[in-house]
Length: 568
Ligand SMILES: Cc1ncc(COP(=O)(O)O)c(C=O)c1O
Image 1 (cartoon, rainbow, N blue to C red):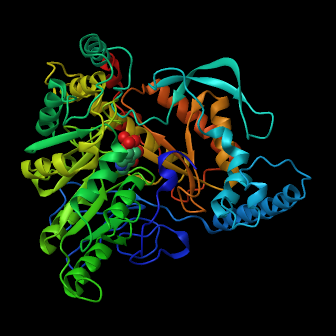
Image 2 (image 1 turned 180 degrees about the vertical axis):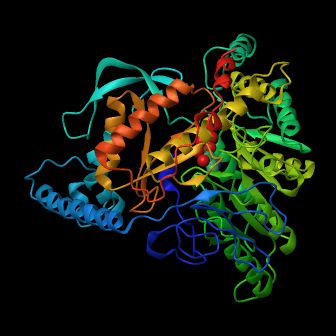
């Protein structure tokens, strides 16, 4: 229902289907919280209500806390009833449209093709016109400012029940932005990054008008790639103009027919597309479920390819750092251990985790204190923490050399715009402290504190929050279809912009709001947002949690002094 996640989908046969649409635990059973994998060597730590995945064969350097509270039974039943009512009304309205009693705005087959099998009629189309249209005003609203901690929105209205919109000419000013992936606050129009990007425009202009292999290879591109490799602690890196294409065009360059891809069921659609385009066999394991992954790996080794039973040419495990719909963090130490044990390759997409995780902002590898060389293909995007555009692949020198000549997006796409490249270089330098300031370091700390504060406050209020304690992506469960639109609208009335998400981006009963926390959010902004969420939560009865946590002393969650320096 929203932008990218709308197409997040399983891409093949899932190892074990989740029961009742409820979240699986990591051990493959359905339950209220993520627990550690159920192996004989595991220990299970318990602290009050929450369960904590702790040292797993000594692989983890820190407690790994993830929450996936079970959907309350009554809420699940009411949600299904809500969808059933909407579906019945949908069919009724389609009937009225068919007999031209109700005006029909949908794409329809031409009159002369009316004997053909309908081109536009499928369930997604039915869903779009009868369910999504009712709440469409919550999406695609143009913003007319920098997507910082606050933003300006263009006011619009619809006279035909959301089929079309008209702009009123007014702007809604200073809307608190809880939706942009601006984790470190580098999406800004002032400060050193914006200044040096503007300076670069004066030297290089905006467009490059050629590919890297022809005459579109600037010294700035070379500088950026060296910087990315240094930042990640690997031998080499290369950059692409689009994060989505980085995945979808590079996976086919690495694997093909006779290869096996083991893909997490919640992988981003760019990974799914890349896997499909590659022609490799795809097997899907349950989200972050190491038992399921190990089972697939051992089966792949024992049985080889179907029918011939020849060994797979290559096995590639594909995972993400932070899963943007669940707010969960990949169990990377276990994935690395498995990949080593079974001699498979690992492709890690750090789109949301790079810059947002780890004490040095180097992503999930840094977060778990792992060696970046343990990941064969490190992928990430510049669209989130760096406030720029594009994506990268990093790893061994040979890998990058190979991709430079084999990847479609490297060979055929025009190279990145110079000011975008400069934004990446300067923001990365900031994070590394190479600019001679503490700005980057403070922002990393600020993001971590804001995340802890926001998550704990929401949990105390009684909302069901998904994901890892350290993830700045915070999904808050809404469940019922009517509440998706109502929550978005009520929040906007209070001048707070949020992203709401429903089917098909989530399972049918797991609609949610997804907050993205930024280092640019001040305590005042977070408190204002939290009190609005609480009020709307009471109004719409969203405080579903049966595990409401106690109010922790403020100082424990939030260091007030941190906010003072963020703007310097
Ligand atoms: C995990 C993941 N990979 C890749 C992408 C695509 O990146 P971009 O939006 O920079 O094209 C996204 C986008 O959100 C993502 O979440």
